[in-house]
Length: 293
Ligand code: FUB
Image (tube, rainbow, N blue to C red; front, side):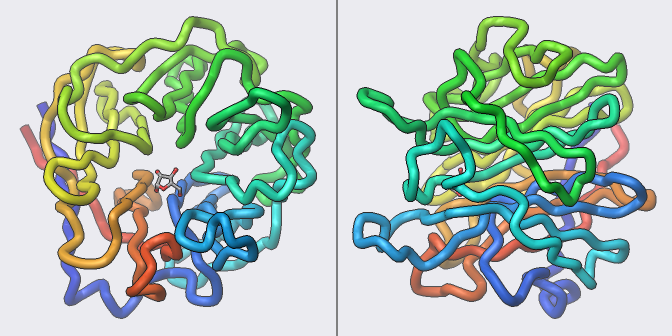
């Protein structure tokens, strides 16, 4: 098996992190489209409503692109809560998203609070675009049968797509070719530690192995951990920690892993610009290496 490790060389990288400096950016999902890195983060804001003054508050999503991971272009708002037909207006719950490309279209997956009597918790919806920069058009309804947050979509080398998400553990299901419906019943991901809170799954394939990486509370706050398997739906073998708890400040960590120009990178977040309130976070990047077996 390959081992996965992040090089968190704070001294050499601190000067460049956080990477977005004019707004908060949490839960960064990085994808390479058309030779550029696109980063789709959540957009933390100081809450305009009392109910969320001490909690996560997100109204919309921006997308950012870069060719050197240092200079980032903000392409502006690609989706906003009150433009999504199924989202409870002004619920400020546009949490961690993902975006993938398939057959000429970009599919943006995002969790939020559904509107309607008796609706509770989070659903996950899809918005589509012809460009990674949007504009994204939301589907009228969220994905049926999915309740939770933190969607991540893996498109396998055979073209089949799988969605992972969190909420009472980590779940996985196959997607239909239309990318907006489940093709299988959701199942709990097997092989992960039974103890400790887990969320934010991020799956990818490397050298024929499937990696399932996720924030995991081993002690006080979230580490980033990983497991490996031979199938996208598991079972996985738990392998260990990619990134330790942060020594200070931020309870959450949420990440993505991507290869760009031959180097692998870990995108994650910390509350660099909000040291006293860890719900206003900022995206960071560090190099990531695979050790030989
Ligand atoms: O950003 C809101 C939530 O915090 C995400 O859904 C979690 O993964 C955590 O980062």
